[in-house]
Image (cartoon, rainbow, N blue to C red; front, side, top):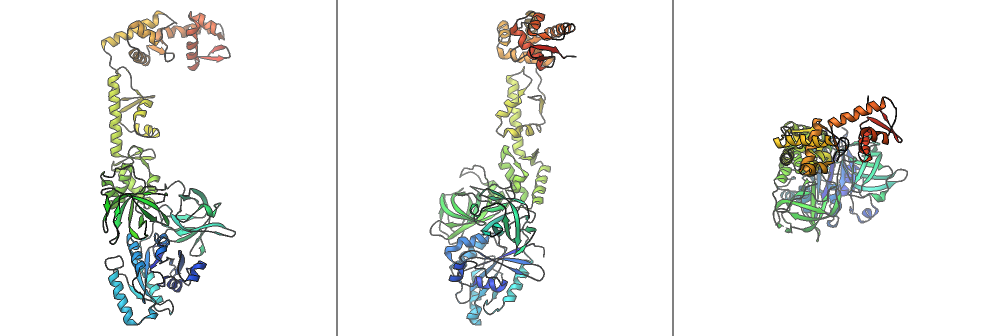
Amino acid sequence: MNVKGVILGTAGHIDHGKSSLVKALTGTDPDRLKEEKERGITIDLGFASISYPDGLNVGVVDVPGHEKLIKNMLAGAGGIDIVLMVIAADEGIMPQSREHLAICELLKIKAGIIAITKADLVDDEWLQLVAGEVGDFVKGTFLENAEIIPVSAKTGFNREALKEKIREICGAIKPKMINGLFRLPIDRVFTLKGFGTVVTGTALSGTIALDAPVEILPSMVSSKVRGLQSHGKSVDKAYAGQRIGINLQGVNKESLKRGDVVVPPNRFVPAKAPDVKLEMLAYAPLVKSRSIVHFYSGTSETIARVILYDRDVIKAGESCFCQLRLDEPVVVLSGDRYIIRRFSPLETIGGGEILDPHPGRRKRKEGTDDLIILEKGSLKDKIEVKVKNAKFNGCAVPEIEGWIQGEIPEIKSAVEQLVKEGKLIRAQDMLLHGDSFNAFKEAVKSILTRFHKDNPLRPGMPKEELKAKMPLPASRFSDLISLVGDIATEKDVLRLKDFKVTLSRIDEGMKGRIIDVLNKDGFQPPLKPEIAQKLSVNEKEINDLLKLLAKEGAVVRINDSMYISKEQYDKMIGRLRDFYSEKKEMTVAEFRDILGTSRKYALPLLEYLDSNKITLRVGDIRKFVLK
């Protein structure tokens, strides 16, 4: 047996003997509520288990059959591997038999057995008639080839044969994803004296261990696993496919509810408007776009508005892509199944597959090619679509793991293949689609080309200025720009690698004139606006030429407005050396007198010397630190 756990769920009309049959198979009465025992019907989910000598444990979820309690049935159906369809021999097929079968079909349950209960109440001929009717009833469904076993919970007739058939089917069940992220939709919340709050459910994927930190979504509660039980026994670790009880540390019962999901912290984001494939049942009424329905997935239930993408109305038996805008957030992954029921009167009308729990904005009449891939593509195809739809935002691998059903090693392997093929680009811990990266690269090159054309004298564009022009998170910019091979970075300036500042003869002559102007007044140099005015040139051009001269070492930038020529700078350093050869300290007044300038120019020059560690300010005096 290669499965850790198998879940069998009952289905069928009210009073067809589901709970009695479960008790006969397991020895456990699944009707746990006082009202259930008094009325003789299952009102809420009941739980039991069948243990086999070879160590196999089959968890049994007994669901209510009454039409008013279908929502409770749905809460138990999400984790079922095998359905035990129960039809009473004395009544045959009834309305909830049909609705339960339709729900199991929509949930894509793969395996099942049909039990004709109360066989002790009818003769063999009648049993054969009912079996023929049941065979016709399940034709064309997943139960078409299922074994039909007459059984009596009262006399024990065929009880062991049914148990053996269940064990046989378990051997062919595809195991749930033990290596996926842990997910346990909560179907019961209660308190135990001396233990505190306990939640139960069927683990859909992953494993959970004692002391593991957990998050309960969408209630946004953080906790820790204080205790674990599976099949009535305390365990240190529990697995996907098992019925599990979790004793949570420091959580009030009132803060949790059925529909919440126990998951590892910081891995899942509840969905509010998933894109889905909708399949309508053959007998369903038509549904218009923007209609209100009841939505069920896992153990959660909420109201949803149906937004049809390529039509205004969907009719019985049809299918299409749509978005379900939910009143309350739910925890669902791409690949999960869901059910919708009519708002009023309550009846199951359709269901399908969650394709994208967190889609981007899409207009109703836009193409749905990405949804076709999410419906029919491979795991690798779906991951590529996810990253592509994220555009410049990109995706981290943990985000993908919390978005789609899948074993973690398989998801990582698919990502690595996509990176190797060049379809995805890795930027630190983020993944960007190749198309998005190429668009980013072309946008950067276009902006820089235009910048160089408009600013031929500037060495490049400030990084922050370019970053502000790009439609992506600022934190992602540096990671991506480093991957663009045609870009050169010098400090905080970016340029195209093949760009060089080229000066016209006029510009070359202007450089000499600027240096002449700076030298003329010694240590009282004109500021940038004054240079522009003296040379009758616009200030932007003077600014670019000064930066170029500073890069070439012909001038020294004191601050944004003030430059001095290299010749004057060397003179200043020479006079400082002479002064400090005789004295250890210098006042502002002494510095002013050394240069023969005014306080207006002396102070910015001293600030430059201090910031470049040529002088050291101590109170009101300066010491010489340049070696």
